Image 1 (spheres, rainbow, N blue to C red):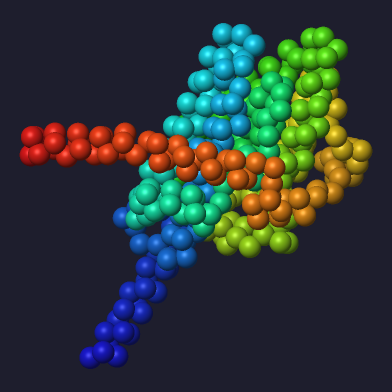
Image 2: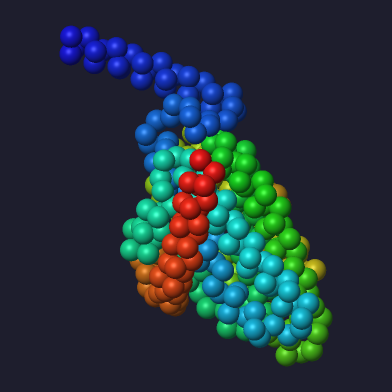
Amino acid sequence: MTTMAADAGAQDTTAHEADFDAAVAADERIEPRDWMPDAYRATLVRQIAQHAHSEIIGMQPEANWITRAPSLRRKAILMAKVQDEAGHGLYLYSAAETLGTGRDELLDKLHSGRQKYSSIFNYPTLTWADVGAIGWLVDGAAITNQVPLCRCSYGPYARAMVRICKEESFHQRQGYELLLALSRGTEAQHAMAQDAVDRWWWPSLMMFGPPDAESAHSAQSMAWKIKRHSNDELRQRFVDICVPQAASLGLTLPDPGLRWNEERGRHDFGAIDWTEFQEVLRGNGPCNDQRIGQRRRAHEEGAWVREAAAAYAAKHGKATA
């Protein structure tokens, strides 16, 4: 009986796998109640969690400038952007929960260093121009990477990305507009904008992840249509977008190897310092300790809010039962 049951179970799994593979091949959405391979679920949890963590950690570098914004208009724009990032984290944690992983578990893994967030947020924002560089370059890289995720094979993730990408598009435009104002301002303002671009350009290219040949997850994620393009394809697309935008801004991208390749119809660009990338991932970046320390403190100081909300929900849930 045991052997027969095992055989039947294996046949069921094989049939489920065939249905899953057919759905992915046909560009159909996989929904939370659908059968999915354990590895597919684990890959989604890892990717969505890292994305969610990046959104809430990413609030910190720019939030530092809210009280120092040069005008009420700039302050209102920046406050709205930071608030948007918190909302993006909420959408993504909710998407991860549909896979059976609790938000508390994900945050515990973030705070203990067992899950990562984007390396880009471990760099400091030294001047007001950094806010513009983050909007133009960092959010621009995010859009390049995330728009294809609107067609992700997992339904809740894809649907969350539609709204996130619309808001990130606003963030990119405000960053570009801020840099344009500085670039066309005084000589000192132009220099400040150029300095910010010089510092944020290479970390922005690293946002797409390691080269395809060294990426542990890209090939399988693309086979499952979680991702639609490889790291190197997306990085190349981003460079090609930024070159004419930089010219319009009157700013120079800090890469002496950057030039148009007529034969390829794309821009060639210099070698990325992947040693720096790996060091930041290991926790040795300029702001790693500061970012995760502030996140832990915020979580601890917000415990009373979560407890009060839970008590309120429990009380009113009983009243309406």
